[in-house]
Image 1 (cartoon, rainbow, N blue to C red):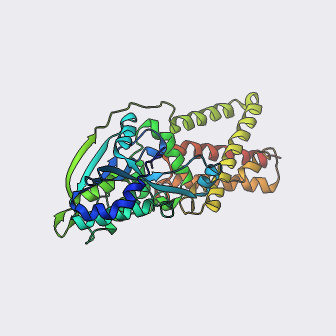
Image 2 (image 1 turned 120 degrees about the horizontal axis):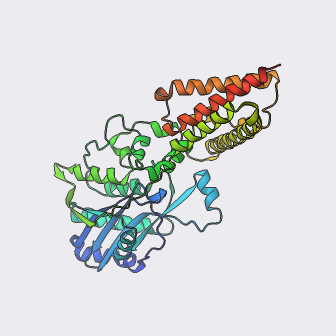
Image 3 (image 1 turned 90 degrees about the horizontal axis):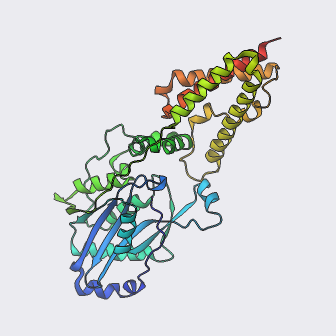
Length: 386
């Protein structure tokens, strides 16, 4: 969730860690850092890191599980296939904070009320995790990310597991609904549509409390209410950087664009023979683009190594076969007559059952699916003419 550009390798601390810990392990201060959302898509859900202050070693280090290298020539191919290798790396606290200050994002610190032995064990585990042979891990959007990694290494190194209370908004909360809560503004409408298009029905599974902590804010809420042996896990909470509101908006939201598209096609259809050539070209473009989108969705379903793009119900209207159908709009064979009526029926069923589908489709797609229904029916009637 955070693309850090540089990190500080404090190798001398690793080498001298045992002697420091033995000298005075109680002079460790461990905090969970929760960073506010940014404007870029990868940062819209915020970020999590772990801060360890060692007054003996005179170090103030932030352990960041959100580092990735986009300079790899195969980066985008690996990204498409879901092979995202993230790295945990130590940063100087000042450098870490400077970046968030420049991006005008908030940082909240929760100081953990854990004993000296737990702090020492956690510090050692973090440095071991930063070693070259251990620092890389396969990133998964909601099951294994920079927030869940911070949660897991913190809870694993406590003497007793913390007791968490439910933090999700409701017992019916899904991954998709919680992701959507960060994308309410019009400026995020296209990002929200992209996520709803590309990610399949697995995103609509309900979550338990632990799973809800894949988002930084909900991990912070979980720690804030957690208790160990009846005592709070968090000793104090400090706002290190206050958020700076950034006003961003867009008029050209997906639902507006698709609605205008539906109106334009309707106008061309009403024009009759005068606009027939333009309507044929518009239909061809519509079905080519829809078919290409369907091919992309099918490729992600098949090619990705994880499950986030599988079982995608958007393929019911974004049919890959539309790419071929786009060049057969004038064909009047029985095959194409059946093709267009089946396509129209599928789109009609989608619209009729929109609220009850097993996958939460983006409402901005309703005018687009209605347009595909409208144009499929038109093509069916054209193929039925003698």
